[in-house]
Image 1: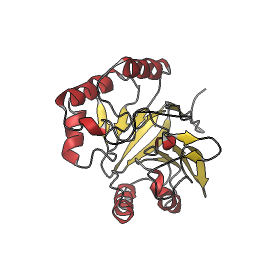
Image 2: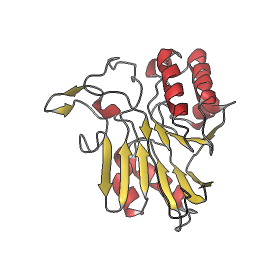
Image 3: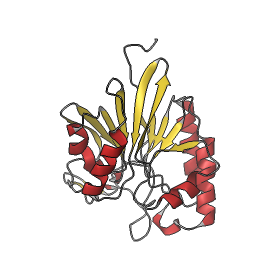
Length: 233
């Protein structure tokens, strides 16, 4: 699985070309996208929207590309416009079971509103028809549903949103994460009960009033290899 988050496209450039080249070189079975596809300064820019589509159509994954809404896609209509004409499967409070090399995986897609009560109800809606016998992989933009996901026995949870702080200070860590848990789940691998969560540092810069800079916090393409009992070697 390749996990991409917080791409924040303004215009396609050498950065986007490098991401596509590196992702496709990994030959992923599945690519998952966990929100914030455009820069805040370009949310309604037709060129930026078109460039995201160009970016998405160049990604290659044998068993599909799956995405959820993040902070900068607050309405379903905006997300529908983004993925139109691409091979991206957009999950909106729903599950999708896929068979990858003989192993069943259930993708659970939940849109992020940053309202914990609302998004917990969305998680419950998405999980309502999820089979217990398969690995459940939650896609949700922020790490803030970790306790709720652990309580509901989600196996793996992939998120972003924090940018790893984007600007990190020596000894002190991230300046701002945008999470209700502060620095606790800023970036990397975490475990709550039997739920493992990976928070991506993301790829882009948020834009708007935020600085277009990273410090001690490199952008990240996250590559994850899962091995099931029925997976052929």
